[in-house]
Image 1 (tube, rainbow over the protein chains, first blue to last red):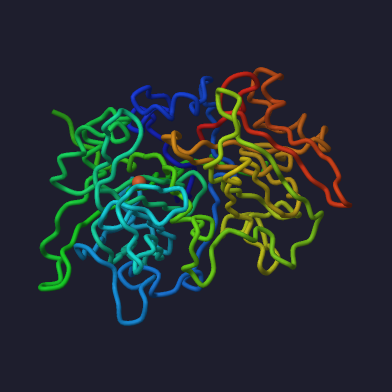
Image 2: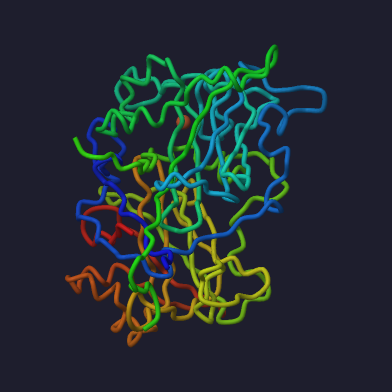
Length: 242
Length: 206
Ligand SMILES: [Fe+3]
């Protein structure tokens, strides 16, 4: 008889380090001391629970969720879909997935974004959904534009969608960015390159998925998200109590 | 050749960036889109226990407040139970134990209202002191930072807490203890988080 135990440790060589002088903002925002390693307690193997009451069906359609009646967002229409899995390749059902992004011109609807590209009056730039019982999620949106940012003098972010996922435990909490297959800006981006392992970067690039396109309507990209997996304890090794 | 293990790799983290508010707190980005934004009510109206407010700054290595942070909190209720199937027991109707909060764009101050959590079981033996797990993301933070807030007025529980006890340097333990004050009849705990430099907060790999 096996029972659920703690989560596999995070591979810190696979994730970006806190400090990377080529991503300049990280320099003063990176802790200098080592992280203190903590074995999971009840406070870490639990986490917030979300349900379908927390979101509305339209929340996942960014083409329409902020558009005036009869109008829609401008840009290349895409379906972004995939599964949330854990490291044991098991689906993570009923978990909250939230995304945010720039519009097709590379401009964010944010009072701090002053890029000269125009705001799209029909595009908010955020969406959210709950994975189904198979861990599956999908959004409809427009492909975001690349945008310049202040790091080196002439840095441009590749097209990307920010994504936030919870899983079922506090240890699984993750925010990352989704890039798009074939984008030449990925290779030179200082934020992408905070990740040292090429395979880890590859895992952040959504694949063009022709099978999931809607003909004459939307092109599709597939992006699976993997959260930390959980150990099965074969022998008694209780996480809690005494 | 050996057999191949068929585990997947965890998706690598990337910074939440400066516009995290659009996705997780759109009202703060300047627009209204959802029926209800998530994470603004941690304890709900029915929660028992002491009502408290938690406030602080996140301070960078130059000593400046970080003004584009998003923090998330995860905590037990006053009985020490988490709102989760493995959370140890029942919680009040409407108690979520989870919240998110952003810093003020001008000052960097953040704060949230909740109830003071109770003690919950430790990993193998004993009880943990009351604490709130905090997760911090921002532009310039490549992987979200995990820390814990403990309470100044729980000296005995803190002294026996297995996590605080893991921190070998007593001076650094102090970075996790929130200071209790009272303002207009309300209990306010002050918890400044230092990302780097003098008094750097203890962060955990959980
Ligand atoms: Fe961005």
